[in-house]
Amino acid sequence: MATAATKVVEVVFEWEGRDRNGKQIRGETRAAGEFQVLSALRRQGVSPTKVKKRRMRSGRKIKPKDIAIFTRQLATMMKAGVPLLQAFDIVGRGNANASVTKLLNDVRTDVETGTSLSGAFRKFPIYFNNLYCNLVEAGETAGILDALLDRLAVYMEKTEAIKSKIKSALMYPISVVVVAFIVVAVIMIFVIPAFKEVFSSFGADLPAPTLMVIAMSEFFVKYWWLIFSCLGGGFYFFMQAWKRSEKIQMFMDRVMLKVPVFGSLVYKSVIARWTRTLSTMFAAGVPLVEALDSVGGASGNSVYAMATEKIQIEVSSGTSLTVAMQNTNVFPTMVLQMCAIGEESGSLDHMLGKAADFYEAEVDDMVAGLSSLMEPIIIVFLGTIIGGIVVAMYLPIFKLGQVV
Image (cartoon, rainbow, N blue to C red; front, side, top):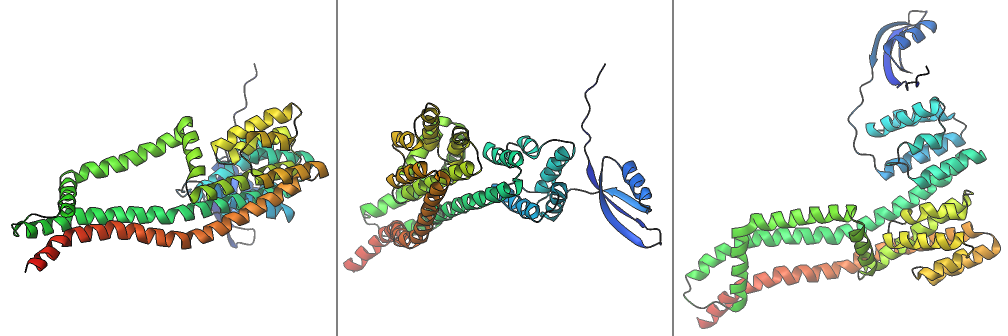
């Protein structure tokens, strides 16, 4: 009766010993157990004095940026002629994130036991999506893995750069709003009550703005715990619902495309990612219909993910890519024209790449301009809130001075 072969998990052992000349040496060896390490060292003429399993440091969460850096390093080493398994060892040992090191060791073990590189990556879909695995598989099939890894690294670097710029553009106003709320809360809880005690000795009617601010302060003092809990809990549950609910994702993605100022930035970044992804897939030799499987999700917007599904259906039935894109009514005229030229000239990947370059440059320009645009808006915002509170609290003093 045949039994299924169990997978042998290898780990890294650190060892110390003496060579044939009695010189103290040390090193590392991958093996399934300590006995294999001792046997291998003795065959090499090394008398081991110490062998221990290398302790893995607790690593932080693996981010897409970590995968992009790994892809660039692997592409560089393969272009230099370094064997695949050795390249994995070098990249894994040199990584500061222990979680990445463990992931690469697991992938390396699968490849070493006969699994293809794309097959090993597919076992970790959280870190290597379909687009990544499809490009690696195309490189393995065509025998141009180093070139495809280089193209994939460029794609990931550009995609991560756009994400970083979008986050930096949104972070400034968000941080200002948070700081403004904290400042207002401190004023309401600690400063206004002190003014209230002073005003109570006036024995006169207070202006309506002052009464309104005092009433808000009393509410803050009495229910500050409820306000902070509701805001914090509401924000947390909203973000969780955004991640898990397709309806909320669709709604928010539509809203993000229409928000004043920032909507244009999100729109251009989505177009840049969509065209860059399709250009990379098509240049790698992936058939158009198959390439569209990964393009929609890579765009980062559910509106374009659904549009891509419609495009894929129409293209598979014989419609040209340009016409199918035009029917969705979500692509700018320039992209449609460049796709039409690319289809006619047989250089679709090149024209899509040019479109991606254009919109990536547009994103760069918008992010650079947003900081100067947001400064006066934020100043007016803060001035209205803080200045309004200050004026409301000093109105009684002004009136008292007029009476005197």
